[in-house]
Amino acid sequence: MKTVLRPALLSLVMALAVDPLPVLAADVEAGEEVSVVIDAAETSLEDWLWIKRPVVVFADNPADPRFQEQIALLTERYAALDERDVVIIADSDPAAQTSVRKALRPRGFALVIMAKDGTIVTRKPRPWSVREISRSIDKLPLRQDELKGF
Image (tube, rainbow, N blue to C red; front, side):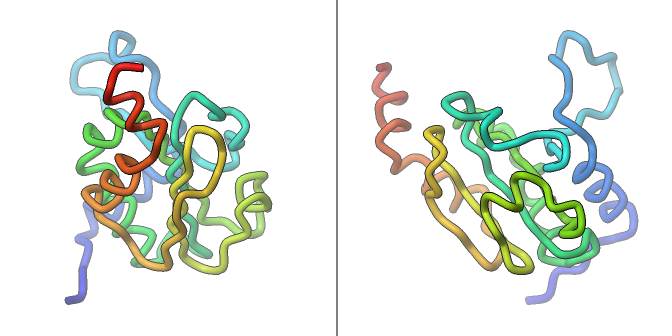
């Protein structure tokens, strides 16, 4: 099944892929659009160590259909990821050689799910749904502890 993104959705996906993480909800005015995707050039994996679980989306070009599909999947159901302390990082510019790209060394499109301790949970060469990502995260020992209230 081939996924086709409409021009309006494509524009939204592209805008989400390059904007930094939003400010707190209290700082957002009514009707203002908020991004949940951080550009890899604006952060490093160390910034999130023991704070959030990075889900990193790589591509060689922001027009890569897999990149666009993955960003759309992640942003459509971000609430489920936010419950799991996920931060979404996007890197679609190999020439920038960001610290995130240097650390994870992707080839073309890649989805990398990481634990809070900085270990790689899984790497995928195709887009994954939020349901699949959530299940992968929910199996982690630290997540199990979080669910138990530790």
